Image (cartoon, rainbow, N blue to C red; front, side, top):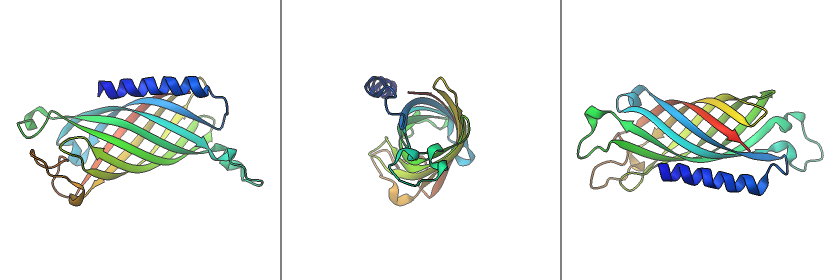
Length: 195
């Protein structure tokens, strides 16, 4: 995970240098987040931590002749990252690793309702990094605040819908913590720098 987060930071720095807010139609933000597992996730995981790179494109910048004013506050978002969860100590054994890693790839809409206050809706795919892969559908509504100097804080609720046909069985068992149909739920706090 350290290598992945370092790669995100380096990529974010390169993008920041290349674009440097020249257009005003969109921006990148690089964030770190912590996850609090809910319901059945709480029985397996202590906590989650991760990082992501997100791009926001302002719909008001599209070349429409007549467009409603609210498009100036509406953005399309694309986000990719990495998250790892610590498995509870009592559950770890030869077949259950100490951590589970996931790669989220999401798209969504973000609306700035008042100054820096925003509401966001994202959906996408979560890919497991253990035992050959497997994936889940994911959606996440959230709210947050973007400060003028580029700092952003947000809270979101995430739900991952995992079905048995999306599992890949390897030498050590299922690719996800559950063998059957499962809904993963968590509450995330994301701190980001916008550039």
